[in-house]
Length: 102
Image (tube, rainbow, N blue to C red; front, side, top):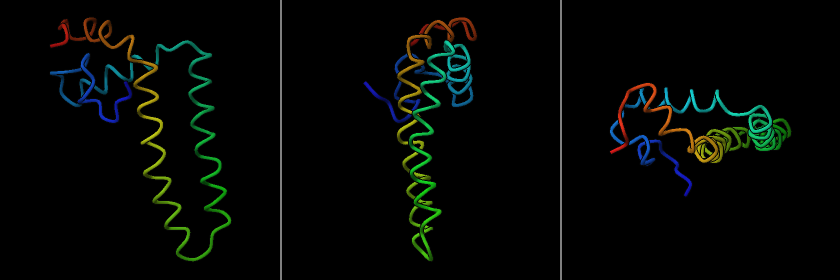
C-alpha cells in the first residue's frame, strides 16, 4: 500500500513528526546505491517535463505550472520513498527509540 502521509504508516505509529522524519531519513540514507539512483531518476523524470512546461509558458500559465509542480512532485515522490524504505522502518525505529510499533 502507498502512503501519502507518514502518520498512516503502521511501523511509525506513535512517533512524533520529528521522530518519523528521523526514521525515514535514516532508512533513505541506508538504501543501496542502485535503489537511490533509480529513485533519483524517477524524481528527475517528474521534474524535467514540468520545468520545460514552466520555461515555455508565458504570463499566468507559469503560476499554474509552478502550482502543479509544488503539488505533483511531493504527491508522487513521497509515497515512492515510503514504499522503498518501508521494509527498514521497524528495524530503524527499534534502533533509534527502542520501541516496537503499536
